[in-house]
Image (cartoon, rainbow, N blue to C red; front, side, top):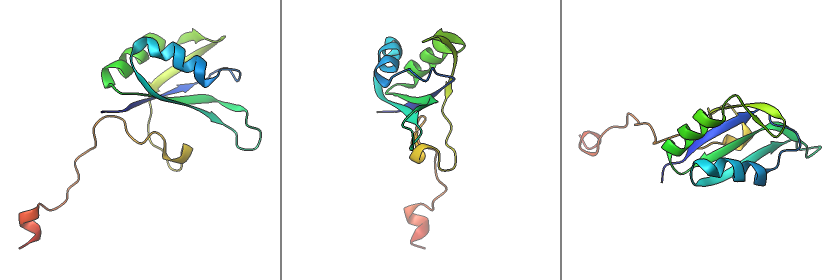
Length: 110
């Protein structure tokens, strides 16, 4: 299973995870929705991560939802990027893992 994560920016502070799940399920199977909240106030920070099991579904969601009105606001939808200490490391994946330059087994034994 390949997980492809989207980030949604400029969400209404009243938008819920269930509302996001319902809307973004129109483009394919949603594996997870994470609405980012302030730790102290528990209030939404206005952005979320949505993970799809298919990169094609994620791209379809971007094409259909970026710059669209949702829950009273124009939202921005893009592929999520990892940042330093961003939301506990979410998203963990955005497509298949990149190859690492590790020595092959026969090279390591020489």
